[in-house]
Image 1: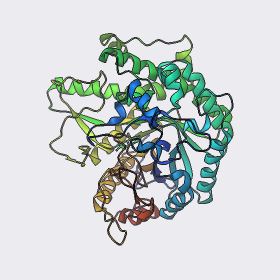
Image 2 (image 1 turned 180 degrees about the vertical axis):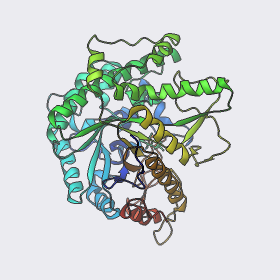
Image 3 (image 1 turned 60 degrees about the horizontal axis):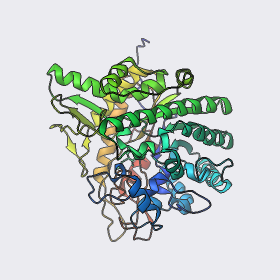
Length: 487
Ligand code: BG6
């Protein structure tokens, strides 16, 4: 719509805050009736540049189940948020958070995933969290499934590969919407639903014995079940709590062609389509045509029930949330080696710097992405993850001088503001890991994102005391000035 003015800054009710996930922070993995989850059988990486989260087989699960300690399995201990949540939410409030993104551990509510009755102690835990948030005027933003599910569903039916998991999930989501009606205004169904390269982490399905093609088949089938489950959850949510909003969540990586050669440009376009396929389904309510060809040429056949297309059409989301950390370069001559639909192309961009973990830092890419997503979907966007994983040093007087983190975030905030001036409808920004937590990919503690330092090392040693970093005071100013004071 033509107007002779542009928004000059962040909207008044912009949701500033931070984002976390249950399996990376709660700990208390075997307390109060909670069941074992898929995340708790993932070993920590031996090599920090390799993601152990993708490296799971039936055999490694068996080994994990016979080891009831958290030594090799850091996601079992997290940062003990379960027992520190009051202190932690108070610190978030001190920074001025308007929103706190967290996930619910499905196995706290339904320990086996297919139980008839929910576990009251699990439901109460999240009641306490939401009440605590509201005490400080913080809006909880809740991910229903963030890289974990009850392990029993893997053992029994190979996770999301099975259609049966849809019914288990809708029982879980209905329980949540009814219980937390009025307490939770913002929901999200699946974290980074497109990250199926993550295999087990994303789908709870074991596929290590399969060929690459069979893996693709299984993962796309699993994600189809997630699409149906997500759409059903959207419908439930709208019905049970019409005031609530429910979104989808995408791992967005901006990609560029390596050269202006049309073959690179086309390869990049395909890469982008494979990324946007997931939001096309969840926002537009249908499988996009380009996937027909992709599936056919890659021998993938999606098994759909006759009503699936209708369900997906009805269950379109209210907003699109996404994580953004980096960008990548697509080179037409390089074939993805691991898996069809590889998202994390590792093409190097000579114009960008990288983090210690090799992630290419690209703030302008965030503005580009925001414009692209807004142009394509025209629904509110929400940046629900962004941040720099770095090695921090705690000084003897318990300070952390993390100017590098401030620089990273500042540059991204500047680009978000540019996107708002471009006309993008952006509803909020929650940085990843406002308090240090266990890394999703490598299970390290030393890959820290937080404004709050947690005294714990990779082996789980430490007092678990929380300390404010320099970035804590910086973010406080950013929020208080609604993004104007970035100094
Ligand atoms: C996102 C995930 O992909 O990236 C988070 O949603 C994760 O769970 C974050 O923690 C950062 O990744 P990592 O591996 O550095 O923890």
